[in-house]
Amino acid sequence: MELTFDQLIEKCKKCSKCRLRSTATQVVPGDGNPKADIMFIGEGPGKNEDIEGVPFCGAAGKFLDELLASIDVKREDVFITNMVRCRPPGNRDPEDDEIQACREWTNAFIKIITPKVFVLLGRFAMAKFFPKLKISQVHGNAYRKWNRLFVIMYHPAVALYNGSFRDTLTNDMTILREILDGDESRVENLDDEKNEIKDMLEKKREEKKGEKSQLGLNL
Image (tube, rainbow, N blue to C red; front, side, top):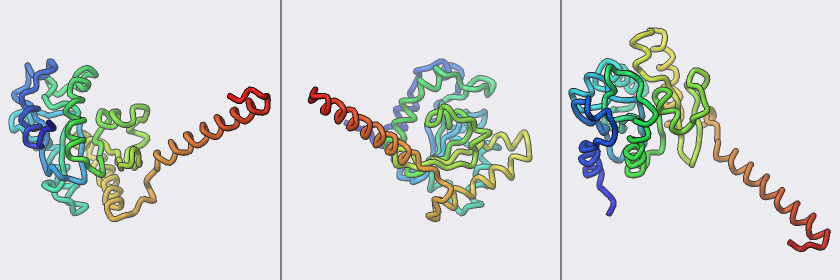
């Protein structure tokens, strides 16, 4: 039997699959609308999130709220989660095995919420869907993949350390607004690319069959 959204939240809170749980105050599953069209995925809980049990409730979260307000999106209308749901000690980067251990929850939230648009905040969230890309080169880009839309942005926390990123994130957020308004001129359709490759391979297979038939092999 599949879990309901509330059951998933409660089950996630009891997780102890990786070493992070032993040092974290609590598990921070996610927050927001269980029927959201937009899912924001960040890196992991910070100090405030670890205490409050809510993602993006600290300084970076306040900036994210500003970004959402700038495009007339309410926080309660989206769903926000992270790649790991327990705070890494000292706010260090999450390690690969910790992200892998938490992948079950990431996938479960995606499956039950079924968002139409993903906003990937930072390189760790980006790497789940686009492991070969560099965020410094593709931030602000939007892609269609698996019939879903992905918008890549820097993590809001970078603006806390370097004020110049505030404008960068604000500008990148406008792309999300344009997409929500129906403008997909900035969206690169990777599904089309896959279809083109599939068609090309199928054409080559047909050509090889034709060559073999001409040789009388009939394979």
